[in-house]
Image (cartoon, rainbow, N blue to C red):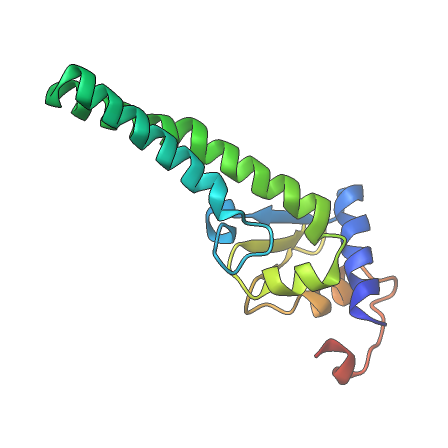
Amino acid sequence: MEDTDLLEMLRAAEADGRVTIGLDPRKLDDVDSPISIQAESTRWIYGLMAAALLVWWLGGAYAGVGAIAAGASIYATIGRRQVERNIRRRFYGLAITDIGVWRKLWRLQGITLSCEPSGAACASPDGNWQRFVLDNIAPGGAVVSAHTLL
């Protein structure tokens, strides 16, 4: 059984609700992450900084400091949430269907697999997602040679 087959089983089990995939978008928002677009965060930060500088120039130092505080609050509530939503969207649109992207993401922290009926859990990067799929999803716990899991 190949990794692509195991990933397809995982995707189907998640779609059926047999497996839960937990994501930590903040950990997946990494320079090495194939589903992270660094410009999403910097676009917010640069835009809010430009607005704060304009307010500083037009309204003085107190207004500028207030604009910086408001900008930080806006990014922390709205901007960060939008970036995390986009990472989740890209994960389910790309990573769960493309084995190359999945392998790159599994090397990062931020993904957990859990199976309610068995209570089994597996977390990236140290957990063995292939063994998790074979033990908890594959029909009859398929027997696979060790070199396939590498």
